[in-house]
Length: 353
Image (cartoon, rainbow, N blue to C red):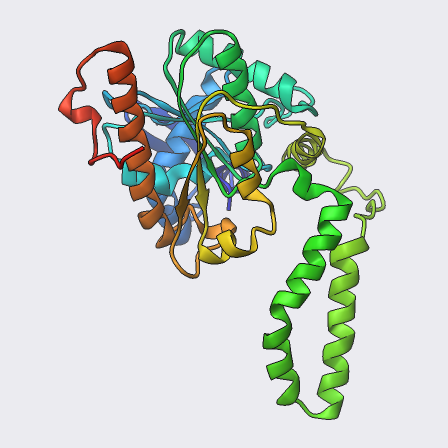
């Protein structure tokens, strides 16, 4: 459940929540705050506080997931649904010395229509970043569709003469992966890759079960390759504004239309697992062709997929690689500008470039 949905659920029960100092306070009618709700509020206290504080900053896209610490802050772009709290498990591993801000898309609260092109959205974020953190170097990250936005954000900052010390993308599909042609190719490749597994299953089935298997497979294949989303008939429920859905649709539309250009720096690409590297269905590795200084690839553990790579237990492995990226970027900045790095700014030994 997203934080917004949790707060809406509390509000429907007339439970009021607010930030007071460094703590979270609430008031509720007798019996409304059930033990289950109390436990969820307690376990997600950090997320709720960050969300409420972000709402206090009018017109600001920056959500302070972890604002404390002396290291250079990281600014990260979430997936297509705009939920910056997908980064919370990662941030918890990075520690209290690593400031971390999510960049929430405009329109998330219904204050305006969302952007439908990546350059305009990135330009908005540039203005927000420069107002909050006028001088780089900038450390950027992006998850899923947010990787495309982070890439364009890095391009615009670089074009303005700012230093982008780190650009890291987590399982971010390349824009060309959304094309109908690529979907057909990927669908065929997926079927071929899964053929040995399906043959073993078929041999173990009786005739009736085998026929049902073929029918289900045909339906899934047709949906994967050719189906288009159908508009839902208007109802009282869906006539209400669904800002989350608007953000998701606008972001996917923008990513599909985006044409990347060569980035003058290096890209750090995080893949969910060796399966992700081998199959590369979403063409994540295509980003490496658009990095003038090359790409560094990091691979998550077995069983990890894009949808759970930022969750436990997989995030514990990937955060280690990410900390190496940060340490290496800090070291490179120090070398370029001829300054020493404070010990607390390095979390672990950086790998060789």
